[in-house]
Image (cartoon, rainbow, N blue to C red):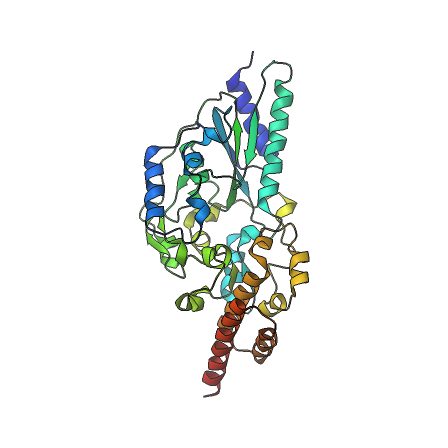
Length: 362
């Protein structure tokens, strides 16, 4: 016979040993108010072109249908920072000629890393149960299925949904990946905790594009993460100057959140920045050809946006960079071979640089 209270305590200990910050347990039921809020958000058109968010709503609202033998969902948080918050802010503010890539994407693709660790946890559970006769069924996820991850984590007490729509935690901030282990173990469910954003609106105030409609409501179509990652077309003209040197994602609403003073650095070597992505100039990355991009981005979450979007993002950032004659030369060189979509952004960037040159000479 299995003592599930003892087992749950042992699972929590093993999760910490595997590098997870915390482990909490939820039922497989999604709060009806959260369901309605998600549908209202979609109805307002705030998801932009992310059609996948409109698909499979039945699975999002009924997670047990994803893995029918599950009766509980184990949530984990995996830290990804390799630098402290102050260093990240300095990289964003003080080096406009350098590329800023969202911290979570500097190392290996988190989807695989988190799922691998969750499967290790499940293997340990199975070993523990091997002599009890309990047949454990499970499945691991990390941003890899239509799952309301933040809601599930929040309702199990892993944190609360902040005004920036992300999961926040008093001890760990928000700079971590979420992962889920759907399980047939009838573990005791953890209770949700109250929110602690209070009157703070820092995340809303610092957003470069003012993408928050109100606290807890994000218009993804204005979010830099959406514009540089999910968006496959042109970046709206009025938003390009606001992107600055951010070429893949944006950390601002997390970097300036007071709770992220408590962010925990990762112990995973997988998340160590690769190919000097945390210190490369915009020109260095813009000079990569498609073969270099494909080779260097293997095993990275960045690979999925493709070379054209990578070049588009860099062109916009080069247009925003301090004037350099070398930037105009490189942009004009790439103009000859780029796709129509990228050319549009290069022409814009050249005009921006030329205007800066004229201003500096006047």
